[in-house]
Image (cartoon, rainbow, N blue to C red; front, side):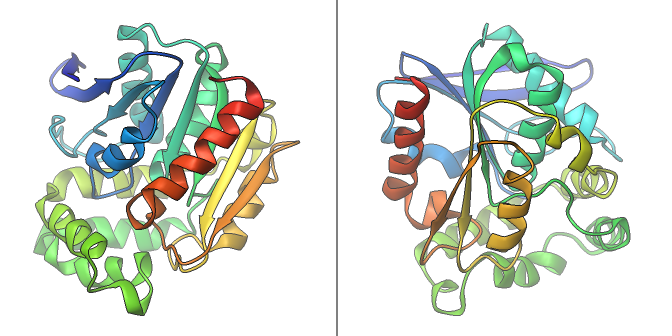
Length: 261
């Protein structure tokens, strides 16, 4: 396992890399960090897994916001270039899925496949995201923690280990990093760019996800001709935490289908 960083001129983007084999690049959800992928990566020993901390999250630097989706995509691109990533599968969850869509449009030479998990081409209207950014800057992460967990997990799962872990990570997130990414989401509409993509794509949704319901994920995935869609029953917004072995099994099945083994 190797941990490193890429200098982005005033802040660093950190990553963790493990294994050897075809590349799989992971991008996490808003307010969390690269560790959401640890258990999934454990089940992929025959691949080089690259897990990135998004700007303003985890161990990456926290520049002042607002951020743009183009900037978040460029951060990921810089890490991939530094690690000579080519013909990778990109796995993006939530805002990480937006980054994946943008990277595929910008740098198709890097990717041979795309996994869009619990994500969308557009997350609603800008106003609520801008209001959320202002709220966390004023009151901190506690102001959004309960609301977020209610959307991420079903009622029976909110006291479980995965939800407890997610809450702890969410409360540790830097408010400026979180707010900056909210503003990036507010300014993003990828319906047209994503509909122009032509690469193997797998969509994954959780049937208990109140943040990106299955129909929203399916709608996004169906923008790409030939894309597959899988529903994980009993999972919410973070199936990589709810059921990491089942999630990895879906990934590996997709890898086999496109020859990424």
